[in-house]
Length: 158
Image (cartoon, rainbow, N blue to C red; front, side):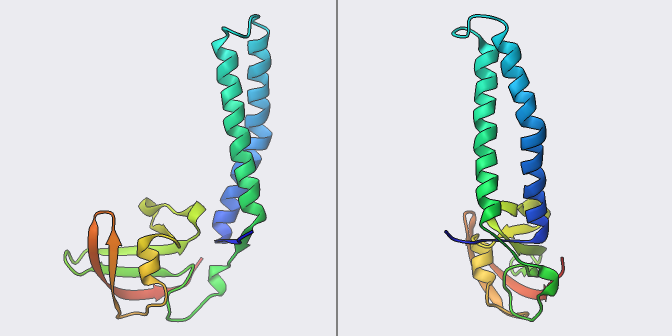
């Protein structure tokens, strides 16, 4: 079983979601199933089938979260340092075509969210950046086409 790298924040967010699904969603869905059962004939009971589907989805997500948390390798970014880009680094880039600045933190797959500046370690952008240093130029093959960036800053902070 492969370890899944993640930041302490990503691990905490997963734990929170797991607890919510186990302690709030699970009992709510069980109650909805029980309520729908009391309405009689289950073969044509849309509420019952909807609640059973919600239960299936919730239990599937619980199993997925438990698996990821059990394989998590939590890497404390605050303890990392150096000038070479690796997991956890916050990188400031400038697009060489548009002069637009971007700031990305390289995180685990499950905590990636490009809108908030977190890119997955497996993304084309992160793969192009790993091992590079400030001042280097990288070519990133994105779904939208090739991009060229200059690395302005490499930092490690939580």
